[in-house]
Figure 1 (cartoon, rainbow, N blue to C red):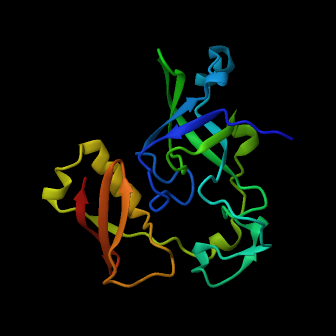
Figure 2 (cartoon, helix red, strand yellow):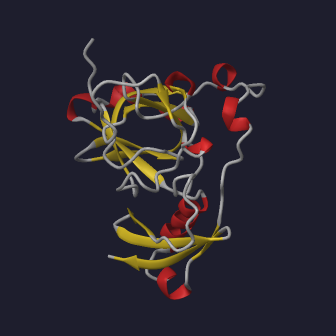
Length: 224
């Protein structure tokens, strides 16, 4: 079977570090879905604006490996316990495909790139290839009684975020709000708790550095 890239996503997640671990966690970051030239037919999106949410099927293009292993170490378990790969959402799979639910916030008609979709809550890195888009159907896709396996018994780590005012002024208000939400999800590996360690990543064209001590994440630098 041949599979084609129909679109790519554009957003502020320009490095793997900092990308939310699941979709829907950070709705403050708005992503654009830009279709490849062969798939820019306006009629292919006819009626899509009637749906509030979409499913994206995409590729882990930055997590390619030769071969595969039947077990992985989920970050939620601190990287110390192995779980079957098909019982996780690890990117290291026999076929490196991802599935994400995002909120459709807008449909833009552009002169050079055709119709562009604006979505919130994506957990895709900038430039991620998208292979298919399907509407989310509440009547079929929502299961309030569902259980979450090992994720139900391991609380997700969150932190308070502190951005010094002089650094915060280097960002537009909407960019600062998005960065604060990304950091509140604590992008560190679950097994790292060194309060002296400084972490760095790129977000929205800015170099962000921070430390975490006793549940407080303090931004130490916002640079170009």
